[in-house]
Amino acid sequence: MPKDHAIIVRVAALLLLLLTAGFAAEPRRVEVYAPQSSYQVDILVREGVDYVGLTDLLEPLGRVESRVEGKKLKLTFNGAEAEFEDGKRQFRARGVSGDLPSKFLLVDGRGYIPAAVTARLLTRVSDQPAEFHANPRRLFVGGVQFRYTAELRHSPSRLVLAFPAPVNPSTLIERGRVRLLFRREPLVSNGTDYVSYGDPFLASTTFAETSDGAEFVASTLQQATVSMGDGGRTITILAGSAAAPAAGNPAEQPQASSPAAHAAHARPFVILDAAHGGSETGAIFSPTLQEKAINLALAKRLQKELETRGIPVVLTRIADNLLTWDQRAVSANTSHASLYIALHASTSGHGVRLYTAMIPTLQPGQSSRSFLPWELAQSPFLPQSNIAATALAAECNSASLPVRTSSAPLRPLNSVTVAAVAVEVAPLGSSADELSAAEYQQKVVNALATAIVSLRSKLEAGQ
Ligand SMILES: [Zn+2]
Image (cartoon, rainbow, N blue to C red; front, side, top):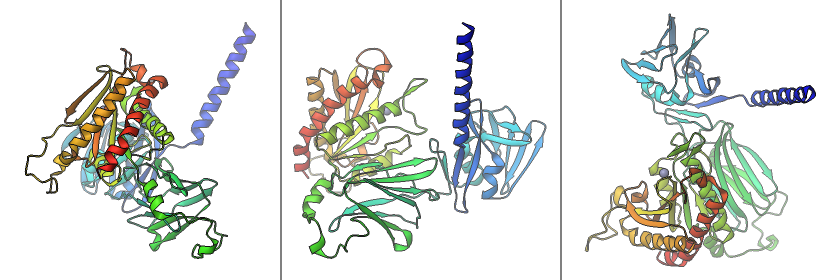
């Protein structure tokens, strides 16, 4: 017995050592992107909450003065005053009081605020817009963040990425993939973080924000080279090796298949939108189970299932990041997809609920071509949305999944300009755990995929 104990103690000590080493290996920082400069602020973890030092955060952005009076920290930033108190959540900035999500800390005469509140606080004391992406721990100040566009072109096959400002990513070309890591650039999601091209050169692309920066990965099926252009504003990922003869010589080109055939492949049929994400969790089912994660798991499972059935797919997000409803609608409307599917999860009810937009259908004589407000943009597409919902419901029925269809004022359905359906998945029984069960997710996804395949001819023909 004592011997066993000794072993347990040693194993525990080893685990502790490994854990400590693991944490030490990845220093936790907030990456700040501001018009003046990009910089990093170290994170202090207290009671499970990420904190950042107020002076560390504000100093590169302007003139900071602070003084400690007892338990209070009084601070001026570019003339604006703020006051915090050790152990208290309430603070005052420019004479208006506010609440921190966790208590303010004074450590060795330095003030610390929860990382999650940095964007809100900066907006309060500086009037500058700020946005904090919690999971990759990236803070954008003064609206510096920008997005990219990607376009697949042919003869020769190449993916052209365009940026509104010069970029300089580190580039890694491996067998089957090209990886671009943007460490310094405030590059953020354009709303389609996964695109499957099904092209002989390009299989798919992914985009994700990480604590190292933004990462763009192209999965290629042929050798590729990378070149920059337009003063760093474009990056071209081109088929062929650098050592190969120039692409301009047609005799040397291995196989010249027609661009039209490529274009037909390149167009996605469906855009999958895992609802919520980042700081917006959606429903909270348990301390460890949040809707945003279930929605993403469902979207990725559905993506796989559709791709094995030959359906090209685009995903709005593939990581735990926040997208606004408008961003999702814009992604759907510019993706060239014929069908938009939003994925939600819920513990109320059982099985699958399908929602189409709740808006009045067009009056006779009201042309679908006339300008429609953003909130009514779905109107002309409502008949196609209903066709999609009917097909989805029929397949759920066939799979013995309880299913209900209704219309609901659910964002962003009203603003999507293709057939659009929101799918809400609830457990069959009473336990929320069923939502994260692989078997149940797959059952739902199989039914949805079968319906989506059947919709292809109906929806693509109408365009
Ligand atoms: Zn939801």
